[in-house]
Length: 318
Image (tube, rainbow, N blue to C red; front, side, top):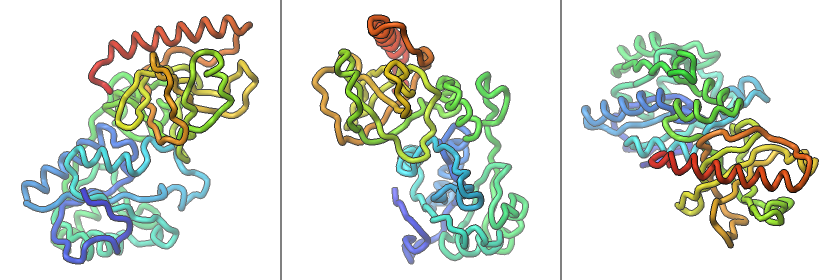
């Protein structure tokens, strides 16, 4: 799959293509419907499929300080899109100047002059251009002038986790923030993941017999609510069953919020400095401060036992 950053990266001899535009944070099941349709339509027409997305998130430029928690960094989104068959991903630097492009100018500059769109696939609520003034109807109207079709894909309606709401990144972020990683998994179609580099912490886990990987997460990462979770620690392509702790470590009067993963039944791991990923399968319990160190150790042993059971019952999700 080709990856471009900025319009200048697009090959000069690029021909017609089928395009979809959006943030696509999380590449959830609603996104997957649009992306799959984009890929299928491109194959029918015998042209490549292209996803256009933005960095940073448009809200951070339009309303500084409002950057939403991210469900997936751009490299992860591109990886997921590639698995769906997308041929190219274009990341457009979203600047103040770019945000002021009128909808018609955006269409000409991106879709017509550079990507030579033959078809554009979007969800029904797609908005674009300065002050989000452009919508699907306007995009369709311009298509008659610039020789591209517009196809609209309705999003699935989520089940119990979403209370009947359409699948959305906003809903997924809310569920993650509440610690409902099972609900988030229903929308994403896979466990929620955070990534980062393993850094040295207080090393109390090692002293207590449960050495953890202290993950310095990427900026703006959507981190689940404080508590203990079952999941996996991904290192160099290997998925290790893990007990994951999120929080400030109140037992030792901590103040900094961390994500720490204990690789169950693994010894002698040296992960410092490695980029790792942590997948959240299920919530186990909330963050607690125990009356004694002995009570803490007993709880940690129970946590690991429960995590092992949950992971063993979730084969095929990793």
